[in-house]
Image (cartoon, rainbow, N blue to C red; front, side, top):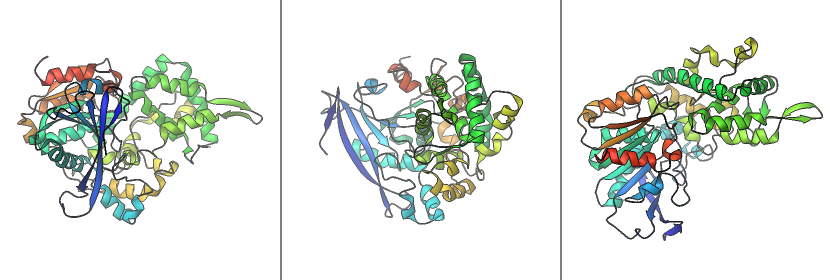
Length: 433
């Protein structure tokens, strides 16, 4: 495929064939896609070092930029960038409700999906690195779950790394899924409190919508069934820099007058569908708890189980008692597979993954303690998605890791901050700050 252009950059498509199971390199093969980005005028400079970007998720394709947007403008100043669609996402061999039946039934699908965690992604990266760089190490930039992958990379193949940069994605090295969610719900509550302090009128708006849905669950375009619990999951927005404002604007236009009385508007329902449907990223839901599993027993739908310890998230009790309806955050529940047509056919496979007890460990404390790769990590104060205390504990466990701790940004700081966050991390990693 010949190179093509966007403002200020030259793009090249790459398609890589990798083993489904790296323990069986001669077995089934899948495809992983990467988009190379180089600054215009430097695209023919073979000496440019490589930087591979690992998107958050799990199950999210690399961001689609138009020219030198956000952090990419800084990266292409001195790197050739590979925007990698991690296995199962984007233009890589897809893993969705449409394609997974090719594997067979739920057991076969679950077995297949067991090869889509950070360990397999990193082994893909190592094969790709050797093909692109001729064996030279490269820099990894990991956002959110991409940082989880980068931390595993440091544990499994540090020889392939020139530098590691992590934004909002230093994972706990040993917390169980239960531990993760037990730490998460209080953070989500704080984000709710901050939102309602900013927009006090939203307390009544959210209650009114929840009351309506309790009596009349809505069928969204495409077949998504909007229940009260599904409505609460709009709280995922509260972890981004502009998310509170976006949630407010969504709530304020919820109802219209009709001959039959007030009803949720088509515009509101369509906007909610765009936020809640997992059609474009089903692996986010299917594998979400598996990213925390490390041979400590099954995750067993931990977010659902731990939620019972935080009764203030019970919308029914809030409506009965006159309190605010709290939104939830980055949690996946069994009911997601009942209300979302993109997930419903995968419910049995998801149950099998939730019951799996033999997930391999992802992090090697001894190797991380002996690390020699320059590492810099942005840790966002009270990050809703990744626990700050867990991240700082891990930062102390990785030899030489330098942190940029800030409350200026939320979880999406590397995108919202333009070039500033990446600039800071590069300075830290190079010893220039």
